Length: 112
Length: 113
Image (cartoon, rainbow over all chains, first blue to last red; front, side):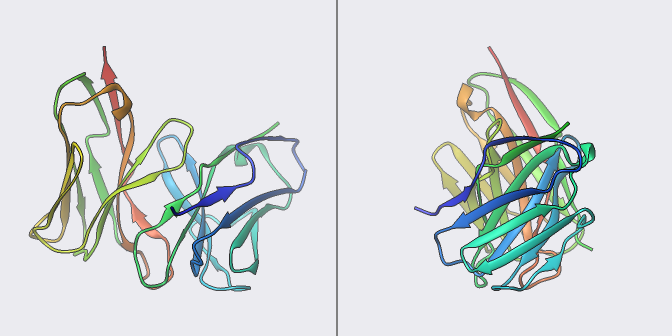
């Protein structure tokens, strides 16, 4: 069974903190993604990666960075958390050959 | 770029009713995916379609790849309370290759007792 695991289900952080969201997949997928989901706005792509150490900006990369040191792990970093980054964050992965993406369970981040 | 219009935005139905929702794109797609997201969870893939005209079922769910290749439909028969959630359609990578999928804004399904 395919598995994408996000390290936390819920996080509460203070404004200005550096925040790390971790995602691990066990399917040997090349491509990994970070989305945020907000009511009325759907899923918006923050960053994606097609290989180890490779990263590409999505639609809303400002205020975020990513790291992919190993194929199975893709980290999202909020350099200095702000209240407008309060959201549901979703990690996904897929192979380079197929379209089907598989999602983690999500991390609901609240920045206070 | 590719755009997906998903409708309806919300559906309020009675348990046992059938449900229909659809998705249209501004360009031709060679793939349609349908996901369901339970409250507080990540989206789960329900059905993948790869061929125009294709009709695929997964239990009470049936999805179709429109013959124009610009639309897709999802039907749920005899809805039950656990069908509640957000249903998303998705198409192929926006820029091709490794890019993220194109997603619709979702259809919220609410079942009234």
